[in-house]
Length: 522
Image 1 (cartoon, rainbow, N blue to C red):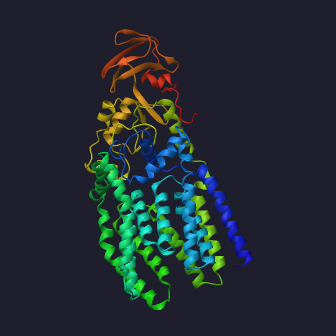
Image 2 (image 1 turned 135 degrees about the vertical axis):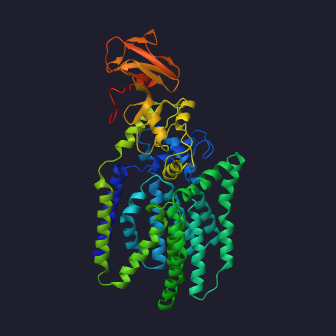
């Protein structure tokens, strides 16, 4: 490479590092991040994933995160703190991309592949987030390096087995690797290496067998099967459009084979290059054809291969203009990244504020009702979560909306604020029996003009006005302060006639009131 090109690569890398630093502290938190953290928190409290709290992901990411979360402690900026382990995972992916491209292509292609990968908006932003996909991608890339550079099939199989314990989407990798090996051998008139396949298979079963044995030993194996397999299968009952890609899969497969055969006949491509290209194509069509809910993060593991393929294509087809094209592309990618990151405005405050209020409004051991674990540090009274699959299952009747019953049974006095993701019955119950405190709600009601109100959740309650404790008569007795109230109707006669509310007393004692919302306070 010429000096100008090297300097350009260095400048692009420097800009990317600066933007990643800004994004780390300012880019908004995805709703999946606290969901994963809630599960990891469960492990720190001796709760068993699937059995004691719901999750529909493979367990290894949460189990590995738990010691770090325990070390960090309960704090309102925990989401930012737990993004730190994603940094070395990001670096592993970048290094593996460089190693593969430099080994089987060239140093120039490796450098530009890394730059394009790191500036591509979906990779840039998703690789920041605390999510299973980042560990999954890093482990996959290590497996790929082990297989195509170090040529250690058994070890590659072991690493792929670890990846399966991070995400079930690893099965798409296994299918893609096997299909790519068969297609590569077929179009290049070679033999399939059965011994290598058996070594990979022998290594692959080790980690999943250990995980399965562990959950079986603690009596949680049926729970794992239900959450990770049967629950996710509910998508096929609630989303009929998933059948269309499966019907198109044979045509996509035929196209990949036809295109691979055409390239094998017209290009003298080294086998590892050819295999990696077919593998990326097979993974893509298999993901599109068979995975239930597809999002940009699902393509993270093949983005490095796409970056290598894009770089190679540009350099091969436009050798003289390749420097200008690649530079322009990287700049455009950075522009799109900045746009999708909302120009790196600080969007983390909302989630941090809510967690701050969780720690202030509730105490360890007190349940808290939220969508899917956004409040992280408190156990939910209702088992299922309201992500896409859960909401679809509730809408179709496959799951029952028993949130109200669970909240009453567990004496849950704190809930997340109102929103569209609450099931209808749960939303009505919470709206009628909880009062806004800011980002959260506490059990209580506005008292009617005639002094009547009702209690849905047994507990100790206070009668409050805008100045603090109200004065008057509660259920025929002078009100002198918070008292236990049973489920049912009650009556309060005020001495001053101002607007009043009945509020779960611990919330009031902890500084919360429906008259003074703590929406942005710390």
